[in-house]
Amino acid sequence: RLRWVRDLLRTLGALHDAGLVHRDVKSDNVLVGPDGVFLVDLDLLSASAAHQPGAGSPLHIAPEVLFGRPATPASDLFSVGAMLALAACGLPSASFGRHFPQRSFWEAAGLDAGLLDAELQPLVRQLVRRHPADRPASAQAALRLLPGDEGGRPDLQLPPLAGREPALQRLLDALRAAVRGRGVLVLSVEDEEEAGPLLDHLLVRLALDGRRALRADAAMLDGRPDQVVRR
Image: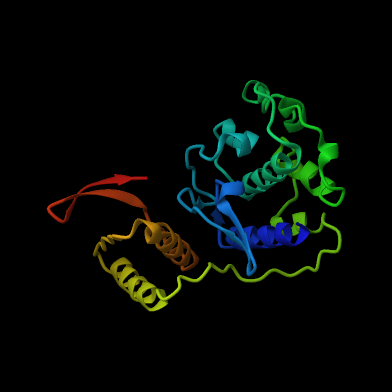
């Protein structure tokens, strides 16, 4: 377990170093496989300085976001802590939403931090602190709370799209050309199972290029986009 927690923090740190915030870190969005940990579902991805409305999954949202402040890397770190706490200690009290964040995470949730693995306790306790300044200053700082941290962090990598890399590169080239000019590129993906991974790749790669992209749903009429709803 320590290995994938390290991998998750390193991946999240690379995202933060690129000036981005995930805003929806939870167990459903963390895939653990033989090649490491992949952070998926980037629908809520935003620039760390952006004043986006509060978003995320209720049991994982940082207190400052609940109070209407923009999400920051510290908010993502809180979500990591909440995810680990819930995985180890079980579901929180039904009254959690009424008492948090006025009370501490542990008190509001009615959970016993002693159920955490000993090597994870220092990390998780720090991550779920109510005030962002009381949490680790970065994902790299959070790593140092784990025993035997090896240091270092790989570049942000996405799981490969098997057999789709050439097509993805052509799309990226077209998108970059559209950004340089005044064109708009509308992408339609017929296979719903491929749409999510493909759009995740495009959003992250453009973000790492310093570009901003809007993700939208388009209703089709006679094969043409009829209405675009910003998401």
